[in-house]
Picture: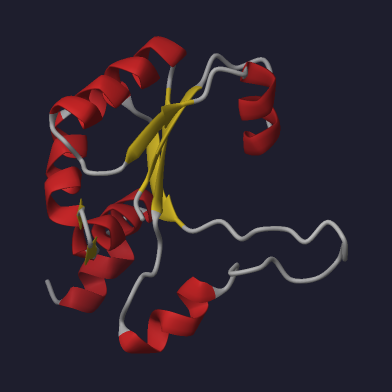
Length: 138
């Protein structure tokens, strides 16, 4: 099977994990984190390496500050993202995954979100017991 067919067969999650695996900067070792996530696949539902933009509340309707850095760097074959978001089925699973990230020294700032309403709003859903972990690298 050639690469084009492999890419067509890949799930969106597989593509996201490949972007993670390819990324290396500062203390971020995408290959190591990729391997760890796969070893603990039972703890999470989805993972996304992103760089969320920052809204300018003084000028609503404007593009997000730094929101298109990933687009800018695509021509250089760089996925310029600094925050890993991992959706888990429950908050205890998120806490367990965060503990693993710290024990295995993923190298970033680990955060488990505790406000379920905030998680629901961010995901555009509600009444689900999802957990959410983020890891940010400078």
